[in-house]
Image 1 (cartoon, rainbow, N blue to C red):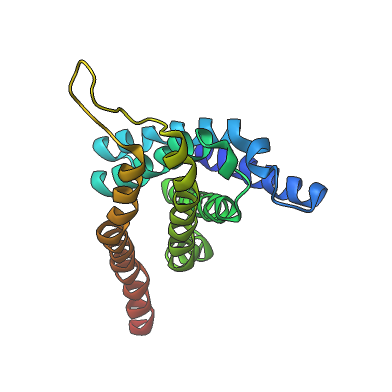
Image 2: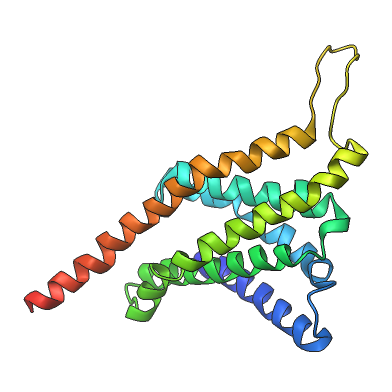
Length: 210
């Protein structure tokens, strides 16, 4: 499924570039690609299955955190809170996700074909250095932009009293979610840096020996 997933994200990238070239603004971009994005990102749940059965050499926990956080951003933030869809921060994480996924699935596809161009390998283990932080900043700023609307409307919240005697405040849940990036992001980021050293630094050493 890697060539398919790569093609899907390429379709999204082309749609985003086309929209910007035609309209000259990011406003309306999310609305124009939202159906495609929701389908592609929900389809990414297969990634966790791939990790479990060993098709993709990625930790199940790493894949689980990435996929679930993105599905959360797509469905419970940008889909559900329409006033924030034109925020610049939405474009930030959309661009970061799209370039990351095209690079990653290109890497997997060429690896499976046993013909991995060096540039694809280099891009896979270098682009993330900028793209991961950009994506995280975009996600955090988008959640932050959603807070006033969530507080005002009380959306997804359950108030007491009720027959189940349970309360839930989506506003505070979002604050906790933002705080959770502090321990989780460095773990994912340093995991990728370790992988980068292993793959690229190892190759440099071999080349010097030659």
